Image (cartoon, rainbow, N blue to C red; front, top):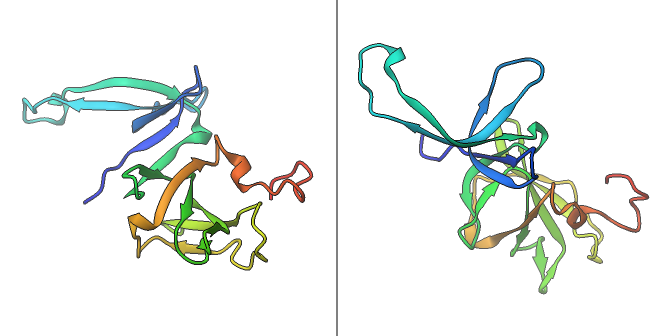
Length: 167
């Protein structure tokens, strides 16, 4: 495997983002999910129970905010996670220096994909709104993370047509 398997989520206690490995406590109720660091000390035995695994800075997180790292970075070297909102620098995302669409990173059909949202302030007709594409031909310099669906939902909301409902 050639990519890091990382997650991020919002901590239950203060709502701050934490990044690291994902751990589920395995109990049905109350269920606790944690994200943080792991250190596996040098193997000292011949049986599986000889591993010494230490958790570092694990935080109890809100399960509905868990996002997996795509293994990709944007034009600024920022890691791209599921749930991130990106600004694209090629057509149809950007045309004549206008940002007509944003891309939301989703996980569907066993792949990370971009889901296209019309920029609510754009005057385009929006025929690309709702398109979904694989990230297989990714060019990092063409994208920039500008937020995420948890902290910046207004980037995807059409204030004139939403009537308080999600679009």
